[in-house]
Image 1: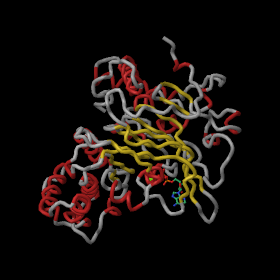
Image 2 (image 1 turned 30 degrees about the vertical axis):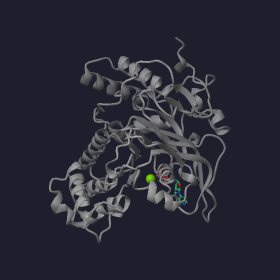
Image 3 (image 1 turned 135 degrees about the vertical axis):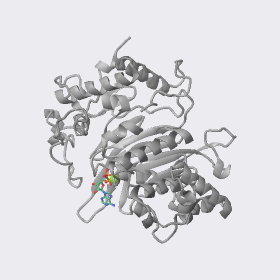
Length: 430
Ligand SMILES: Nc1ncnc2c1ncn2[C@@H]1O[C@H](COP(=O)(O)OP(=O)(O)O)[C@@H](O)[C@H]1O
Ligand SMILES: [Mg+2]
């Protein structure tokens, strides 16, 4: 069989993924060629520069990148809550949903005859988005729970509010559902907590409440924007676990935004690495962690704290992200990239195909480029990660990765016969 991985092909952008995967899951969010500029007194800030993101039912997709790379702006666009000075230069944000005629208990996975609809969020008016999508079909959890909670209202009221507004259910029903939700997010004395105010709770508890509020309208899609950044490490891990648990139990889709690649390993199926408003590498979690191709991803991986070595020095990517007020020719990452080629200063790299699910925008993947491999320390680190994974499963990780890759690729193809008929479980156990 031809091994395409050895010969990446420039492809402009990724080919369009199918509407329905081989395992029956449907694409619910499709961000295509999104390009956004902000008008500011200092001049136009070109914050999002032509990005593509697909999200299927039940999937967790992470967006990772340093601060200012455009993660939050992308998600605000998807929620229809862009700032007033934003200008959408091009793109579509297609959201596919089943009309929620069944009310609050509606299960989007059950085929109860409701039709699938598709809307371009960028073309809808704000009021329609607020009553049909935002907070109902899509819900967001932000970094700082204090800003999403109303300090003057007790927790109970804040959880019940959305359910009553969106679904017109009785107050008593809303109360019971809220207690149930608080239990689901791991709160042991929900009745008492319902009567308390945000300032009476710890940071971790507040974030659990925010997650309960997000879930209260039974959304299909949960967008978590750095939900653990303000919390201490122990609580972070618990909130991550909670999000993963909810995602599995409810079968909802999650978009997880973070600057910390270390967090992603615990939650995501797919990873998009963003730099200066572009996706510079995209792939399955395994492809990004075990076979990264972009020097920026190499930098992010090297910067993760490593528990295996006694070396306390933490790597940081030299330099800082570009000022988006001044657009430069060529690859935006070139000034910080010690592997930059001559062409990087002249021309932006296209997305090169590494596998059906893995693409990276770096000239290093051009067949004419000199052969450059990732730094030795990172190679050693990946070897350690693989060895750890093998210790856990007792099996060869390379064989497992190859099998997973085939399965993920087969899933993407429409109409081909493959072993991927059953529900995809390949990303589980992380
Ligand atoms: N309302 C705005 N006006 C001008 N610039 C903005 C606005 N919102 C975001 N930006 C700029 O867009 C870029 C991306 O921001 P953001 O998406 O918040 O980054 P992050 O990846 O940290 O979430 C940054 O350079 C930011 O300064
Ligand atoms: Mg942000």
